[in-house]
Length: 266
Image (cartoon, rainbow, N blue to C red):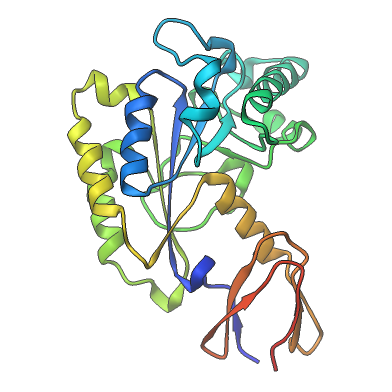
């Protein structure tokens, strides 16, 4: 039986996710643009800076990021590779506690401050409840992550227009899943006076039925669920133990495996 892991939710082969750091006041304008065009983002926040000049307040976090993901970025934005193991734990757990009290759900993702990490940082993240973490090492492609704890994005937003156009025009080879992952900072649009580029990108990318618009954690959960499918030896029966539905291709036909379901494929 021919089975392929090549589909996102809804049976589509393309997904778009956006990722923004720091929690600056310009997130307000950025979120409004996202919402207007149906885009979804993950916002990696330094809770230790809430209320400081140029930063959002804790009181607005839940309402501002409703429908998006609230994610960690450490409490005070240190270089984690230069931080003792105990300090790494304190920075991440303190940020999680503060954000979770505001968000009302477990915070399970983060991005690395300054894009800085090393093997020690990677080794402690699972014990701190972190299931993915984004780097700043853009690869310029639409491939899926090899390691969710060192998740390299497609591009910084300075390159999003060209790569967004390519993403829309390109047909996946051999029906591979394609992910466009854009990261950056909202204050850069303000500093560079180029908000029109985000408006142009959002208008170009929004509203496509063939694209799954998802947060970082939704992408991570889906990829984990795909890997977690349990097949019988004959591959004619599959069990999905995850809490999310998974789509696969069976004999060139899209097949939905509902959360918690056991499905006979043959």
